[in-house]
Image (cartoon, rainbow, N blue to C red; front, side):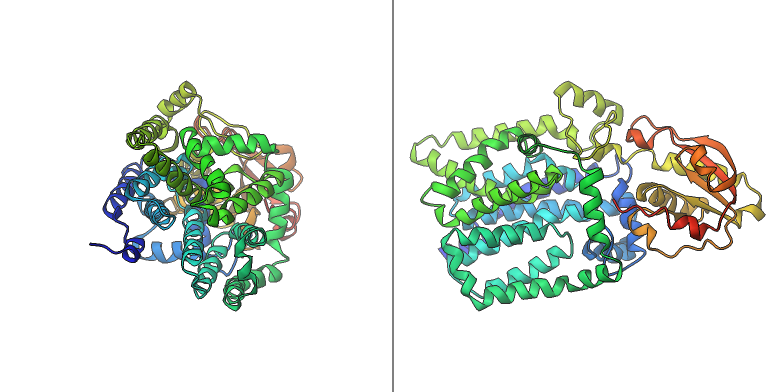
Amino acid sequence: MVNSSNRQIFPESSFYLFGISLVFIFIQLFTASNYPLFRDELYYIDCANHISFGYVDHPPVSIIVLALWKSVFGDSLFSLRVLPALSGGLLIFLSGYITASLGGNKSAQILAAISVFCVPVYWILGGFYSMNSFDPLVWSLLFYIIVMIIKTNNEKLWIIFGVIAGIGLMNKISVGYLGAGIFVAMIFTEERKWLLNKFFWMGGAIAALIFVPYLIWNMQNEYATLEFIRNASVYKNAIITPIDFFKEQILQDGPLNFFIWFPGIIALLFWGKLKKYRLFAITYILIFAFLSLNRAKPYYLAPVYPVIISAGVVFLTDFFDKKNIRFLKPVAAVLLISGMAVLMPAVVPVLSPAETSVYLRKIGYLPETGENQEIGRLPQYFADRFGWEEMTLKVAGVYNSLSDEEKRHTAIYARNYGEAGAINYYGRRLNLPQALSGHNNHFLWKHEMDSVTSLIIIGGKIENHLEDFEEVTLLGVTENEFSMPYENHLNIFLGRNPKRPLKEIWRSVKKYI
């Protein structure tokens, strides 16, 4: 026999949860090498070579983890995909535990894990290395702790909450949205009692203390992150109405999952068994309102769904049991898995790029990027894996056409961190110098420019480059039909004899966005 307290720690469904998680991890790793490195992975590798307490566009935890990981396992394509896959698997496993803690039985726990398994956006986030790979897991851990606090009244759990929240903030500052949402939501529920509890405030203080190094880094770097956020909101992120933002939630979480998580919100607000957890529904509503009204990308809300899905599954399975229509539970599981099977080629690289492009248009699945960018044959999360190596080879061709003497005084300039990261990653075996770039943290890193008299420039227009160089020659054009349109057909120029020192030109290339 397993008593009720042990069931909360080790749900009876653990074996099945482990199996579902393992399937997720296996598929991700089996397909990991089918498409090349993603834009952000190239940037993260560069960041991991410049360890710091902060970066223009993200806190340091994911970078520190990557630096440690690649020091042991290297930075190969497969190596970089292991940790995101494991994080996604743990998220699925944890969803079953959350469901158990909310009062769901064995079948509910399994169905919740299947439902989270069938969320398309988690396949995308678990498919390449970034801070976003770990964000849903952090949010779910925090929700799980709050469930346990509500169930047990164990005030000391707020200390653990604070530690995880602090680490989460140092991974991605969007955890702050969650913290703010929970705080405001508490005011409208019985959990407002914790606002007078010393352990609650101790947890908050711990989270803030862990976050202090990033704040100090920003103070030392002219509040670079605030400038980045402001520029992204004004110039980068697309304008999406709250209705379109909601539609994207349905798309990114899987259309069939809507019939689980939406009832979950209603159940948390009004259903007797879950009303004591209505804090989660109010938190969801608050964060949804904030993000949708502030031009945030739709996937920013993705981390909140496992707990909402768990609530929905508890409600639905309880309803099925009471109405003696238990057969609908396996039917729901089959429908979810079938739906995910249809969407799988849209979010996991199981097909060739050309086949994926055709398939996406056949099923009508082409998610928005949330940015003011043109979409090509593939969605951005696939397209941004293509063109980088070909671009690097083109640049290497230009570089190797120079005399040994000119090479010693030649640098490479890239407009953004994807291009710079590609030069630095793929250019290692081609003996290319490290790229210069003014994009985000590349602008802050020390570059040797005093001896540079020639610059290989990726992209832009010749008339603009002639403002800075006496001589500019077009020596190549990139080509990749599957890359993002703005990364295709890039001109590669060679600029000679700068009209002013590069250090002066450098001041004008800063781009925090």
